[in-house]
Amino acid sequence: MALSVATAQTGPYVPETPGSTGPISSTPGSTSAREALGTTGDTRPSLWSASIGLQETYTNNVNLNPSNVAKSAFVTEITPFLGVRYLGPRASLVGNVSLPVVIYAPSDAAENRVYPTVDLLGDLTLVDDFLFLEGAVNVGQQFFSPFGAQPVSLANSTNNRYRSSVYRISPFIKGRTGYGTEYELRNDNVWTNLSGAPINTNNAQYTNLYGNVTNTQTTLGWRASFDYSDVHFENDQPSTVTQLYRGTGIYTATSSLQLSASAGWERNEFQFTNSQDVIYGVGFVWRPTPVTRALGTSVQVDPVQYCSWKSVTPY
Image (cartoon, rainbow, N blue to C red; front, side, top):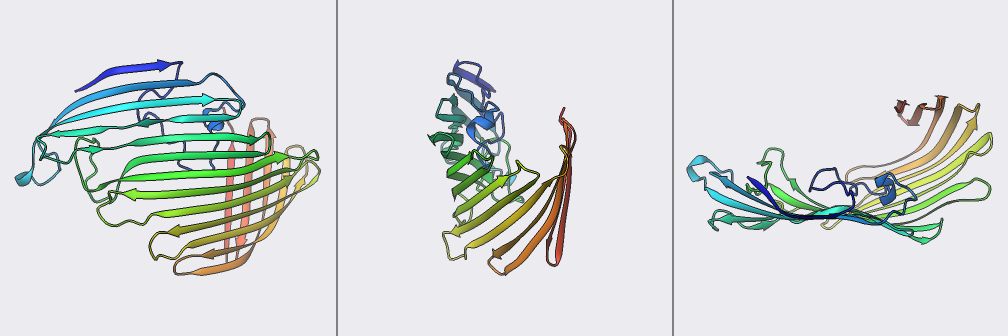
């Protein structure tokens, strides 16, 4: 039995209920808040949605224990929810927050808990067309072991459930010169925290520094890029470091065909292995029609060769 006891909203905000869409902030640097909404440059008035839900559940095995020690309980779930969609001239914020509160009767059946769920993504323009700041928060409930209990409802309590919290701050510069050179320098800083797991878990801090400079305005174009990642753990586990530096020559053969050749260097430092090597490869991008694109790459990292192919025809 579920009952929505109060709702409020301004504008056609979607989603209107917790969990109706996937997370928009979980991947560092994947998109900006404006891009997440598909409205780059849009500055429509802010929209918000708020509700509170009430659900009553009866279960004859609240902790999913063997039948000889199972406990029955009435479970009350109260879920406040807030969704926001703000697009301003210099800042934007999209996402939602919900705070399910689970109460058990009798009280000794299981421990009362709060299961916050947060999915927020925002950005801020510090200097027009040059300096930006992006931030994201993603908090949710996960299951620790695939072999443990995984109840579909919060009404059932299990030690296999834990809270995963991810916070990200990403300052970056991005722009284009008068000669058609595009540039980007981005620093992703990510903190992960795992709480409530059945065993001690390892929180971590992830830092990524990415840079890219490209010019394809002439027949012979070029690109230079680097990618440096460092993962620090709170315990004595060694850090993980990966580095990639690459230069690419780009030849525009025709208006629909572009060829490229690249060379660079990579280094990987993992817990048990370290490696470094020269990398090189070739690629192409072919646009036979305005709505069709095919692209492929072949990269050699001795002694392994990696090949990929992709064709895209949107409708």
